[in-house]
Amino acid sequence: MISGVVQSAIVRMARCGLPVLALAAAMTQHPAQAADDKRLWDLYADTFKKAKYVSLSHVIAPDIPVWHGFGPSKFEPTVDPQTGQPYTYAKDGFEATRYSLSTDQLGTQLDPPAHWAPEYPSIDELPATYALRPLVVISIVEQVKKDPGYHLAVDDILAWEKVHGRIPEGSVVFVRSDWSKDWPDPALASRTPFPGVKLDALKFLHEERHILLHGHEPLDTDTTPTLEGEEWLMHHGYTQAEGVANLDQVPEVGALVAIGFPRLKGGTGGYASYTAICPPDWPSGISVGQVPEAPLPKSDKPLHWDTSAGARVR
Image (cartoon, rainbow, N blue to C red; front, side, top):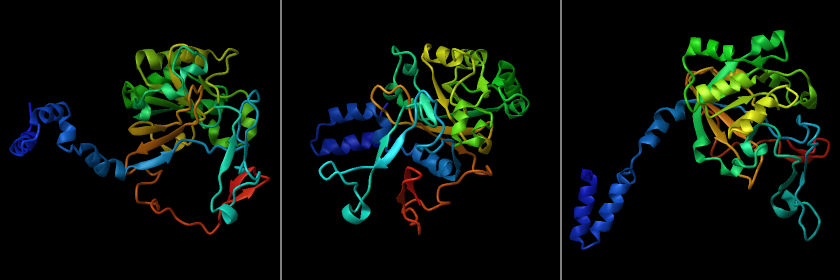
């Protein structure tokens, strides 16, 4: 059915002798576009603009925790290939950085199944629908205080649901353990035991609750010799988040998570940005307009290259 707005447009074009049949067909196929549908803009103004935003990702730096099998990464100034000299603000009006990253399994991550299973999608093949999802946070902090190697179990999930209700289908479930409180101590990469997620819990979340993905704070899913949880996920076409942070600053229920990642060709891992979108009265986070955004504020401490840090600092 053609709306009144579309009908009026067709009538006006017919009076001008324009090809209205093609127009009518196109506009009936895309009625929202033809009517300038602004519902999502209204939703942003009414809801998302007032929400509180919390970053759940670590900053990537040369000295952050990483598995010894990957080795360290290196940051250095980008060099002009003709002169062999770094670009500088004083000489060239800009500076740039060369990142020699030892792995795509670095910092806060989004693991596509191709990390273990080449027959499944790589990071650049993940669908655009990953962008925004309901966020569930299940805490095992109290269990970890008693047992540093505690792993999320099905009983923990059922206990969460008893309080908050059924986990939404297609949601993202992050497991809070507070392991990341000691980040960026490089020793975290080899600290054992560490909290994880049991295979039964992963199967329950995916096969019974049909979530999009789960995430955890440590850099591995579990402490089994074969990493059985990650092996099962990857070989069944599931993704997972690793190295997640700041889960103590978001609610266990009611928030959303925005997911960003670079689409590296054939990538077996991804440097991910997770941002929790919390209710406007949530005590943590910042809202749109609360801090300068455009233009961004000028600092009285300009960035400069610090050789000892191996990065630019203020």
